[in-house]
Image (cartoon, rainbow, N blue to C red; front, side):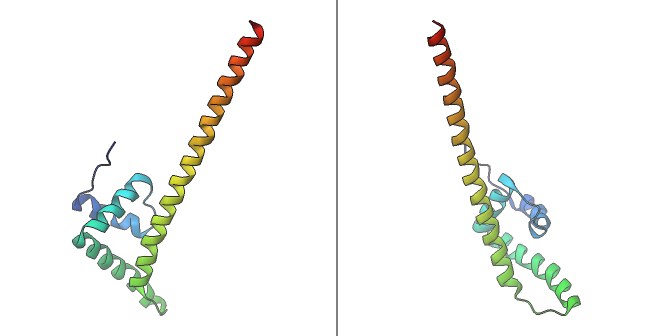
Length: 114
């Protein structure tokens, strides 16, 4: 089944969740895909991230490279989503093995009783 693409309005509503690291699952995948494809939304993420994090850092008086940090954040989201997908695949494989094992045991019981 094809994943439903995200429009700019939905994307903009999710920017705060992305910045706060609370965006997860399919929504995060769709968000990152849209950000990859839409220059305007990518710029909006940069603006909101720079404003939010920049103001906090100015108050702290620490040095920062917010553009680099945002790029790292996007990369980290992508890696995390990839690892979660791989973990699900492994889980499905083990689940399949368990089902096959259970079917084998049930068949063996019927054969031995028969």
